[in-house]
Length: 88
Image (cartoon, rainbow, N blue to C red; front, side):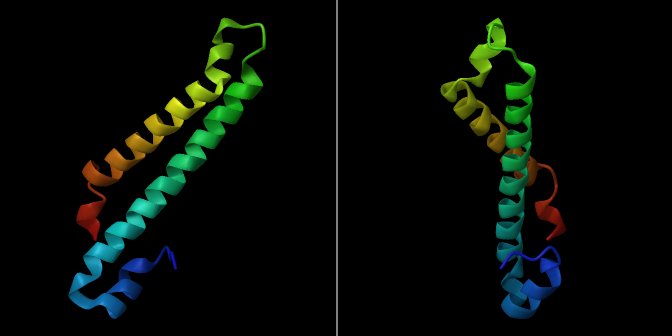
């Protein structure tokens, strides 16, 4: 259902209401990019930080959970206030 060339296809299907569908697609893409950034950062932390390091606390599950929500919040704010919604 998600198509990177969705501006034209959603206008054909939804007509004047295509902006809402395009905004939903931008939200989906923003969330997907946020998950990719989180995965790269977390794997990077797992590879770089040694078990004896005091920074090892960043690899705990609760710290990972907080990092995930921070990255997803930033991705959402970029979609909402970064000017992407004005393009649809």
